[in-house]
Length: 504
Image 1 (cartoon, rainbow, N blue to C red):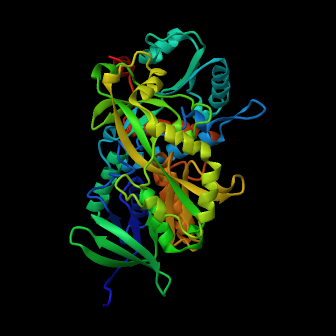
Image 2: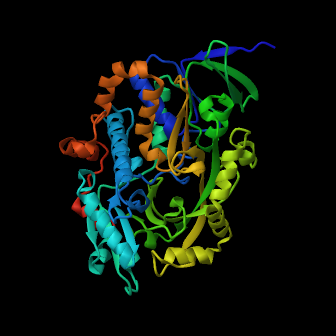
Image 3: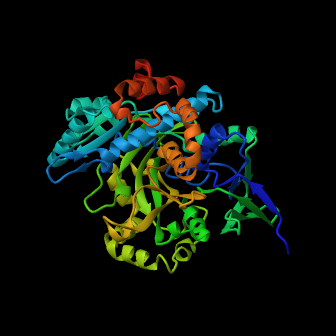
């Protein structure tokens, strides 16, 4: 039986924050292109971008201690923190452009101002935090950071954490008021609402089953319309695979050389959620601690104020769980079917090298609520079990690949783009900081996949993102301008009265 093909300039797989961002950039840069999006679920932003499914913290590297490493000589390496902060500022510039041009409205529904803090206990950790603060505050990106080891000051910053605390060991914190809380699910839907009103076709309840090269070098995308139970065939010169944990399987189906010897390891996240509004109102910050010795970077504990559906919430975690699914709505066979002949050795090596991670995951999976409450009480000394429920967040798939530094089967903690040499396919893999760096990552996709167009697009990109091609840390005046514009346009300016009311 012959196939009926529908020709499209570009196909984006997955209706999450990455496809929303790439689609929005492409529509601004190439408005005449015909772009289609295919999403397996019934609306946008419901898997990895969902507000409950890991995304949403507004990672700007202001408080994440695992982004800053102490070197053997005692100095603090802040290179990763600076890079992530630069990327988050790029995202804020693009969001400001979308709001300014009325393509996205009501920014307070997806982004709110919120202090970001780091908190440590013990003399050696306090000394680490002090050195980290001295290094970071010397960089223009982090110059607004404050440091204190004064219990009275900390009571003012974090009253819930300091209440009834036994101060038998040193304690210190850093605080920066430029932090935010971001609801990426809401932002994703706002962006797609605009794109759909502008003619971009988004097909919900459509599952991409296969991606194959055609004889002329373009791509055949086989799509299952889940509602009508029909198979459709589309052809395109460019495919972006932004399906969260589902991206690895689709990347493997392309058969491109760059897809070989790459594996994925799924990790589920669990959070404690406070259901006592009186407790929730006593805390107003994202407070990150330090991972315990031997624990992986994904386990950094944090007590987060969140704004979900307009309501203030309080979450603590993450606790790791395990499921072989690559998506929260995925299949129990996802992990097994991702093992291929070309990545078998890579996956096997990762299993041997990460025995401690396996042990950690087992301990986390079998942990009782009482054990999790013990961890929470390191942050809130008088936390009561009846005030907290456990919720399952989304699935992360950590990339496993062979690297020069780590050797065979190295587990990667971060976000990675895999592109074909001809630029016709790009896939997004990995996890945090992901959503927060979406604009920088999608600009990287455009630069890698459309090098012949970037020159003619550059002026428009700079209109949307004034810092494009520059480092904000090296341009303090531009950095100040970017902050002022974003604060005004995204409604992030917090008055003194509002700050006082934060704990009321």
